[in-house]
Image (cartoon, rainbow, N blue to C red):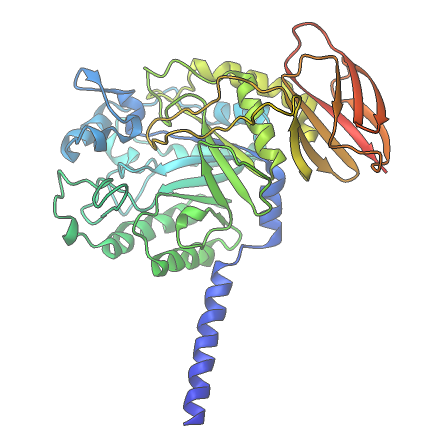
Length: 462
């Protein structure tokens, strides 16, 4: 009897160890590159890009979710592929644009919620090679361009939603709320495990086998994925590519880093995390989306996220021809200029003892978080609070000054106990004087009138 009990406890221990190991992050090197990179490009591209926000002569509801919100039958939605011919797609141009903007990695939709694969999938002919006049695999060119430019590469994969497959139930916001219930109305008859075995696992094998080294699998919408599903998917991914990072949307605590969608963190988070944020309101190209964030707003978001220990994955929306929207150009161009001067305050940094402070102590902190819609959303604050954000690297603290017009101000987060060796602007066109006072670090800065409203001071500590 004792031997049976002992064996039973050993069995339980082994199960626990196995679960612990599976749920652990990949190698420290993989986590380190991710945490040091800070900035990536997100790309949503698919049949919805060709639709561009229209359906049967009217403005469609839902953007990339138009199939769901318009309840479009699969046979009709699939006809969009007949016109999808992105002849102006240029992988090298996409990647160079990302690199010049300071982005260190790229993540693109291999399969979104509509179930359409943007690569040559052998397990499903519902893909860009088999169904469109383009008849080529753009992912091959994109992966090759990323390797050439030293950009890390990741595949987005919609996990718990697939409106092409008959076996995908959902439960958000209510039972069947994100399911294809017009083609496949019996929600109780759907077998999620069958879908995972028939489509998810084979497609993941393709993505991890046919394109060389993949740095990230970026899952979305786990929905009803079970702990066993998540465990098996993680084991599958690492059996093929052990160093591949997996985001938290694999579900059930099996990811390497967490995701914050369309919002900013309220405080420093020490574990790896990433915020994914759109340039406009939509995740996909939509001709009605004509109000993009100001370049300075995008940089504010990047700085805030990095000061709290996170990465920014900034989304761009190629159109049906394969072109980045013109409205994205000012953002990319401004990022290029700003990161060339100030990138050292971003890359490879960690949070300081505080993430920042406001110029005026009584002013409320801005928060990017309002009523959430996973199809269309923009919670960007209308008012840019004059404030400061801090990052650190070695013995240097970087003060990112955001929309502070005053030439004289005091940084109260520094105290006389801090032994400062120097304070200098990263933009050499600025000139400053500084003094440590009982109230904090007093700064006087001379800047050109109309200069970009976000700049960086480098504070040396002994």
